[in-house]
Image (cartoon, rainbow, N blue to C red; front, top):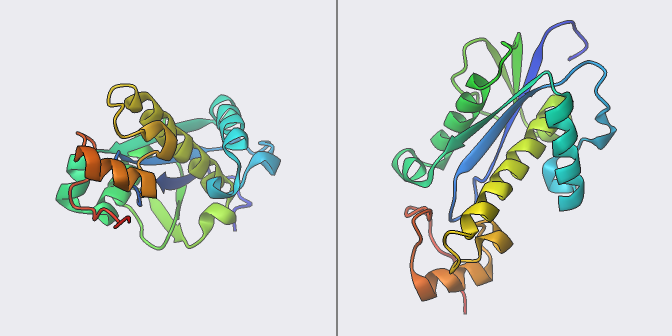
Amino acid sequence: MLETNKIIAGIDEAGRGPLAGPVTAAAVILPKDFDTSILNDSKKLSEKKRIAAAEIIKEKALSYGIGWVWPDEIDKINIHNASLLAMKRAASELSLKADEYFVDGKFEPDIEGKVTAVIKGDATITSIMAASILAKTSRDNWMIEYSKKETLWEFEKHKGYPTKRHSELIRKHGYSKIHRRTFNVPYCS
């Protein structure tokens, strides 16, 4: 399916499920000779391997772009539309125009050109795997940096995901500036 001379971009997002922070997408165009042995769905790699792979992807990719959609936007347009918008923004950051965009999932963002949604594409298409890694590491890094500004919620530990500790901290301190107001905080006993 991908053995062509076309310029292929893979796109994936990270951060649909958290209670806080942005949803982040990456678009990546890999060179034909990229060592794909370092790639996998970002959720299947250890943090250490993700970070190492992200550095190699940034160094070797023909182009990559990161797209961000912020919590206030997520609350206005919902997480589904926010994910698609982050993907569109990531694609717009590419310095090369791709002949075809392969997107993880079953929905296609509004990107000019040929777009193909691939369910579980982050486990089967190398450029989507690379995008998955960049989206996750970019978002995680942003949350770690932000945690230095607002320390009460320990974002550096849970990255905004709905852990028991995060729920406890919301109940104790209320919402931070980056909490998604339309997301339900899980009950914790």
